Amino acid sequence: MERPILKLEKRLLDWVLEILNLCVLGFLLIYPLIYFSEIPDTIPIHFNQEGKPDGFGSKNTIWILPCI
Image (cartoon, rainbow, N blue to C red; front, side):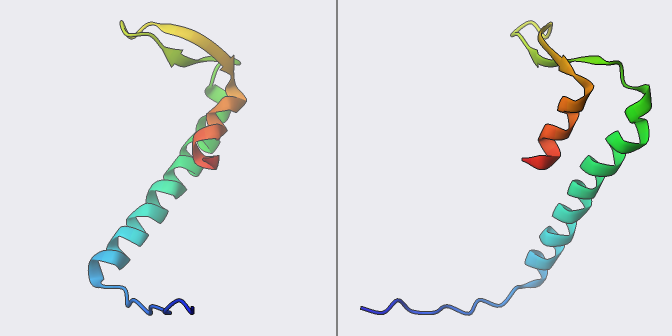
């Protein structure tokens, strides 16, 4: 049994969302790069229900979000 091949054309909304997505990804990469030297060596990476940090990591953990 062969699967059908679907050719879906992108609409205007699809293109707008793609461009917006690339802009957000670019921001997530460029913003930390600009201020990387000003970030302290240890930063909070997890917060409890009260909003207080309860987990810490090195400043290199800031790159996890853009990589995901």
